[in-house]
Amino acid sequence: MTRKSTRTLRPDVDLARPIATYADRLHRALGGTHHVVSPLGVWLVLALAGTAATRAETQARMADVLGLDPRDAAGATRALVDAAPAELRLAVGAWVADAARDGANPAAYDVWSRSLPRSAGTGPIPPQAELDAWADEHTGGMIPRFPAEVPPTTSVLLASAVMTRISWAEPFTAVPAAELGGAWAGTVARVLRSPEEHPVGAVDVDGERYAVHRAASSGDMTVLSVVAEREDAVPADVVAAAHTVALGGGTDVPLAELPLGDGPVWSVVEEDGFGGDSTDALLPAWATDTEVNLQQVPSGVDAAFAALADLLPTAPTDRTGAVQKCVARYSREGFEAAAVTALMRAAGGMSARGRVRHGTARFARPYAVVATVRTTAGPLPAFSGWITEPVEAD
Image 1 (cartoon, rainbow, N blue to C red):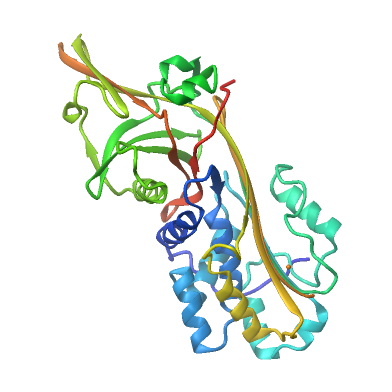
Image 2: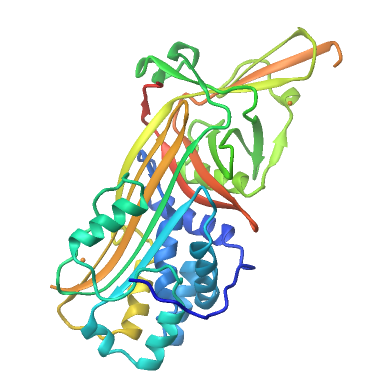
């Protein structure tokens, strides 16, 4: 079920930086494990709960987690979900059991319900089969089952689904893994070489250098791969740097400033030739299937549960649960990813001749990825992760 609202949208609120800040919180909790998640998916669920807060203390907690006043977060969520970019499918649900709704303050409940996106699923808690169908439909079959078992005693269930499935505007070619080198060359037989249309370069972020590769769809989606020159870089710092670059930060480092020869990441040669300098990248294909218990990491769901408690009656036997299921695949032809996030409370869970250079960036060890979609306010991070397990390039 869906309901309509006349609440004014807030499309002027830029969500990119709050989402990137929230992503840093989540990735620092997940550390160096092989994973891709959707911080956007979790943030959307938290934003659904934000306007449930009626006490000043709870409102402040939600503002800290969201990086925005909860009312602004709700308005921006409505604008995004109800008019999502073409290559990003979004859906949210905010279901409340009849008994819990009947016990709420009517005026506060009306304010909260009117803050929800027009397209949100609302009404009583759907049965498990309907939730499975909801997840399947909104992830294009990538996640066919809802990531949580929802008991009949559930009083409130908030959920989001985020999905993209794109083909690269210019696909990679598959080459022998020996060209990549490193330990991963012994793990798979073939890896990916980027075409000349893919931007590849060195970027300085806060005094640290990274190699950055960008692969884009023919539409609005771009996936950045970012590897640190320092082999001992903290994974979460690399993911944070990737978000900085994704949002237009960092300083480009000219190829002429990179040392000739084989380095930690770059292999740079100089020879006689025509035209300008050029770059490409070698990186593995990869796939992930990640499930995160959001209550076992500092994800901010505790503030969301507190906000819901401001609005909806609780019982001593009530238990809570919060989880995200995310699957993603990066291949020669394209990228696809989907995530379903659930939060619930239940009783009893680039010509002249000259010297030219060519540099090849080798993503031969763990690196960060960030997938962004272009919006009127700029790039919006949708998925991000830390890649440690390559798969065979097709």
